[in-house]
Amino acid sequence: MNVKYELIQQITDESINLQVAKDVLSEAVMENPKVLGDIFEQKLNIHALCILHNSLREYSPLASLIAEQLLNKNICAESSIVRIYYSYLQKTASVHELYQAIKNGKVEKLDNPQIVVITAHKVQNLSNMGLQLLTLYTPTFKNMQIQVYQDVYDYAQFVKDQFIHIIDSYPTFSSSATISLYQIYNDVLIQDAELQDFRRCSKDNTLREPIKLNIQESLLSDFLSLSSSLMLVSANTLRPLNIPTKLLPCGGQEQQVMRYYKKFYSIS
Image (cartoon, rainbow, N blue to C red; front, top):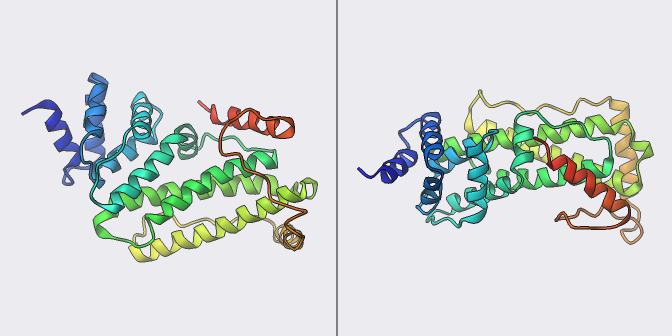
């Protein structure tokens, strides 16, 4: 049997354990990196994408190669759920260093509220796309949905940790930063509720339960009270922080924020 065909058959065979298939893929790609491009030319199923997803979270040459392929290839897929999953993996690949850092707990605590807002915005965009794949538990897609659940859980925990780290300094923040952090707080609550819904539907007790924000009650109450008051101010005179979508040259304070942003993304 053709070696390439045999490899493709192995990673698309749903009867093969994900870890076993991932090891097979890793060994094949290390021997010949070009085989990964051949794989991406195929009609990949959920199982194959789960293997790529599982590999993407690691610090390894394979993860970098997969990220590159995800960004540079279009997928041939008949199923809409496969296309959504592939789009999710593409977005993950676009920030795969940040993704790996979050998955492996390698992210430093951020002290600048603007940087927290920018980073949380990026991460919550990934969360929202992942939650599209968790809206209804489906046994057929169990492996995929569990992996995505674990991602969204880790995204939410990362944002919570950053929020907890910075919240006691909120009286020194600008009004726009306070509003943006308030919106982040609300998004975290919504995401936790959706994760809980998925846990109930899947009846899988091995899934980690979202951890509530561990913040002193009086501190949180004061922050929410101030944020609610600021939200009543005219949108014409007070707006949340502008979130840059690309790392482009810019001036003034925003340039300083983006320097921190680039430094943050260079985590090794």
